[in-house]
Length: 328
Length: 306
Image 1 (tube, one colour):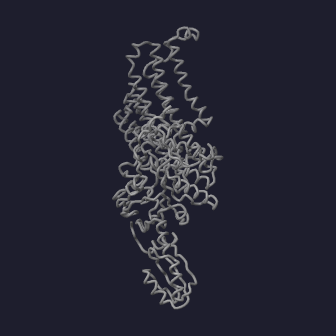
Image 2 (cartoon, rainbow over the protein chains, first blue to last red):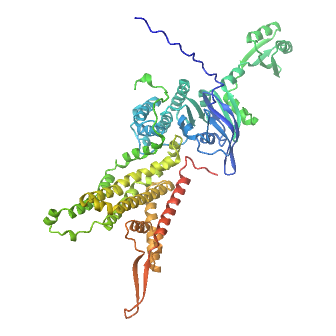
Image 3 (spheres, chains in turn brown, purple):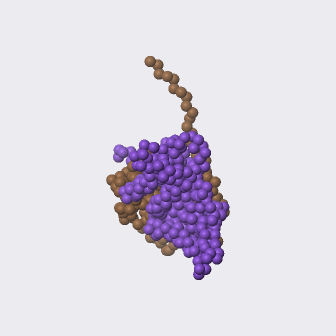
């Protein structure tokens, strides 16, 4: 029997990332409570798979999340989530979002599965689908065995996981996690981080993670947004930041440093002499570490120590707190 | 679910229509409400007056039964507007106690456990939340007030004939309107108290106080000043007047006080005049507006500290 001729198919052309609407697009977003400005003219396109929202207490992290959810009205400007305006399409936006609040939040006198099911139904899932996904979500976060227990009887760690389950039960495209590891012991924290990374790596949802714990953000996020006094202090891609820092070397030498430095100049490397035998070097494109060893041998200089300087997130954060505002 | 399937998945199935989502709240709430055997028993007791009403209607039309009981149809209460008004008032009283038991924890429990952000971060508005919470009471109280009363009216119409039904349709409208107004008031009052107070017991006490204290105060003022205008402060009196108006039994002069001299001669007669019906309706309307304003102010995902 002859096989039917294959139907010619349209080639699937992936839309370049820069043409897709940004996850969150801030258009001069300002929020005031009374006469007190909380968020001041925030601007920028956030496109990361997992965006870390950092800042000291009172910087406006939670207010930003609440404004994006439509809990507060912007006093000026607006924001778009996946291209939808937060002021005009609040309901459509909330259908795309899952939110895990910072504070202890649950509905009393309900088992976890009943609670997550109710949250699923409120998100628009039919009753049967909501029940099925409530079971799945609770198994996924690791509360499968405790899903029929009342939420009041849960430990803090379990309540955090139940909050995560209700945030993902309807399969949102964007998940807001407000201090998800608050109050968790180390094993529970690791479990939460693992879940967040799994969700990020699934490719089905973007994450906005607000946390005080820099290490959590560093482990989960590819982009960070640092707020300070309601303004954007830093927005950067962590991976690119790391890559750029890979070219930044700290050297400790022994011998006549001047000839070595001149040779580096000829290679086009920027440098700074920090003491008689210490150098900081930024390697140019095409210059490798082995070139440094070669020059050192030629100029009779010993390289006693060579290390990459990698800005940790803590460095970036502290720099942002010192330097003031550097928007996008 | 198989272990290998435990991964994050988006949902791609159909969604429920947005307009119907507020009904999810009563559906889940009823499960909790009827979990209490004590409440279920009380709720069943609330239907006993309806049984009496049905028996009375039946007796009116069953000569054999009357003969067995040695009764004459004239000895029974006539089945007219006043008959239905009487039972509407009785069921209204029971409805108040059901509202007192069910209403106060509805919002206060969510406030105490910070559950409002969980509702409102979804495609679910504050209005839908309030409608959902109110419909818990509206549905529960409808089952025991105007719906069975309407069935009683239809029962009487069935036994009496179509002519009676046609000429007494105004009774049906009275039953429905009086029932709806009362349960709406109870639902609004209990939700407002519940939104203001986080503790169930305190909220129940406050609801009781808000209804009875103004009524007692109105009674004292009425007694001192020999009037009935203070009834404008009493929810029970207002509702009584409005119900009487709907059933055509409202009389502005609700009593007389005779002032006598030492020889028991009447010196002066004071008429106790009720506030007009429009004033009663206006007072109820203002009461509802205040409740709605408080609910609008209190039902928010987060309190903003300005």
